[in-house]
Image 1 (cartoon, rainbow, N blue to C red):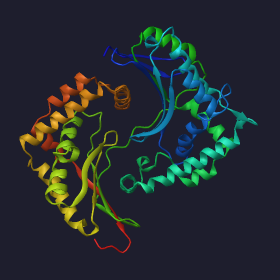
Image 2: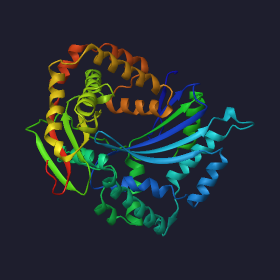
Image 3: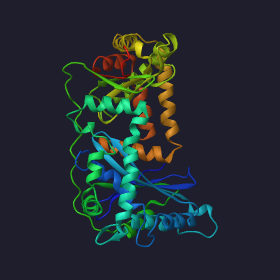
Image 4: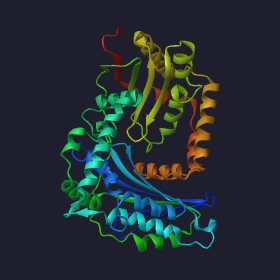
Length: 426
């Protein structure tokens, strides 16, 4: 892929243009960065749904969708993402490239104008958002917040993180709370929207077969709306001392236990040692050949699933497994043994080599995924260093077995969360 063009608009929005001939589509993603705060995270999460209900030119969701369909099935969606102690509000626009259509050369311009219109020209009523739209989207958002508990695996992980990081912004749920949702009305959300647009640091990414200079000129021409000075977001708290392991048990009406272990690693995507941590995590629980999968699930038959994953901007590692209630102690013991074995260097050359190959393949596969390439740039900007595929592969190649063992020695267990059935014995 050619060099990414990075410039800033007069209103402070950072623009990244990723030129590549690999894709027949153009992917546009606009990110707004917010500090994770209990007082306004719910408003940030609700806002995109209300904005997508319509604009002055397309005053209903149906009219907006019909217009997008005229642009050869263009799609415009929004999502909420959590990276470290930052909540990202992400708008995604997916377009067919003009050059693959007969006589067309305005698709990108039209798509960007719709995105601009959505952000800056919403449907208003009595100087605020349309009451009906806000009420309906609040009902939907309530289902999203309540829906977490229906996904017991995700719920258990979220609860472990909440307990582990209870005095840190990272404990805030990215969709907010029902209590805050009930306080929101059309006027308060509109007031929040105006400050959101003015203050939130923003970056716009475009990836596809694009001429960088012409594309930047187009973006400059469309995204002219006035903004204030972007708020400086505080860095994510990473180095939190572990005073001792906390044990949390929650009783729910469930048929299967969920065991989640939260560890502090002290390492994030910004650190040179992050790549040793990647290999450590992969050998421990990141792949089907990993120690957790083989020893907890396959050999001991204690878990329905067992894996580990990293929170790359917060310096955390989570081990998650689904177990019979009675197997709590056994599973905990065998998981701890795998972690201890890693620190003692008890893993084979085959474990190391298979994990290296798996991670290498993941980096190479990202080259074929436009959203993954943009995500990598966003991660790099948050960490203060954007890395190319060649950079990532070089870093990975330089990791030794001794590096993995050294990193294993600094991974500390912080919190053990267990979801069990009411009245069930451990």
